[in-house]
Image 1 (cartoon, rainbow, N blue to C red):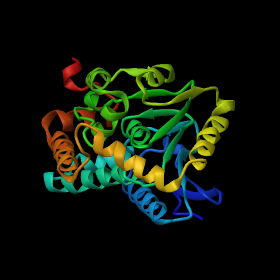
Image 2 (image 1 turned 45 degrees about the horizontal axis):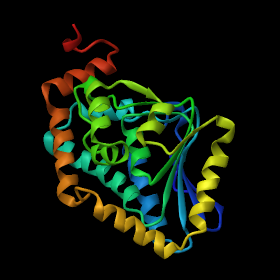
Image 3 (image 1 turned 90 degrees about the vertical axis):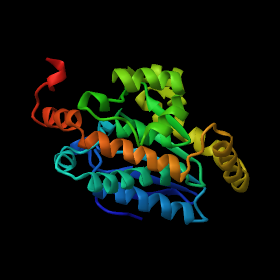
Length: 263
């Protein structure tokens, strides 16, 4: 089955669904259409009793480069109210992945930047090619990794998140593995086998127990992923987008020049 031209939903097995980002020409970057399609896909799969495991994948050399450039140009002129609405859509998309009752696996076949790291972190499990690069690049644009922040901190820990959120350094798959952002880093020819091994392990478990176990994991995390926390992340990114540095950083990026704070 298929959602639309930006996101494809398929069933490689009767009990397994795969959600695939289909914008390889723009490195599978987000825009409103992608965000809406991902949200709808994960909500539908969550409600489908036949589905027991969901794999999140992507086409092309990159997994996800974060925000689409055209979308970023539109955001540059948004009011705070428009930014709040827009960021809330992104936050709800991430939450639809994290809150899915079925176990989710990120199949990371290439680089993941900014919001792409958030997609990886929102999934329960992740397998990446050993050549993948990761980057939480938002502060270089005068923005903050706000809506993805709760998922990234849970995936890689607060101390590691402090470094990579604040410095916007790139890090490789071996580092992502060491930090816990991904669970395996494998050669490209072993990526599908690595994903399949996790799928088989999950299918060997009780579906009801897995759903309960996911709920348990969420509840024993220090701070719940509740509406209050999600709302605060939406405010953070909306305010950052509308700030002087946020506008300068995005305009500099789009104009292929350095922002004023880089001299």
